[in-house]
Length: 119
Image (cartoon, rainbow, N blue to C red; front, side, top):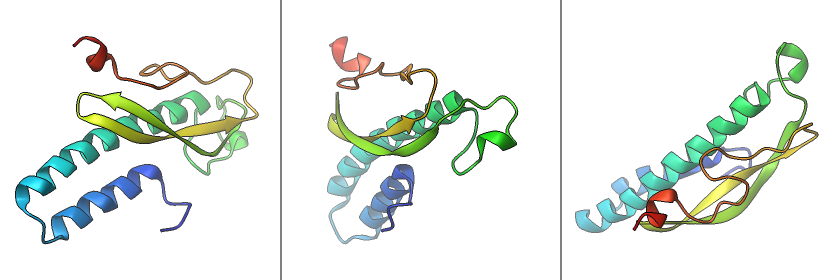
């Protein structure tokens, strides 16, 4: 799969492949639950970056009046501990911004979800 495919689209492809496989349904559903949590968290991170920059992927800052300076610069893999087990996320990297990006969901350093802390 191309490196330009978004992490959320890669997770969706994995979910589709699971349902197309000949594995037992309970196995599939367990893996889909983990992937669903990964998809939800990855989508939230991507949305936060879009909101922070004030524009979508591949949209130039000059074409959006209130856009922040800076751009997306790939991803960094991080592991988040959840009640469903550890989940790999691809945290967006930014460059050229005037302010540091900090996720409202996870803060600067993603390590575990708040649901896990409440146990």
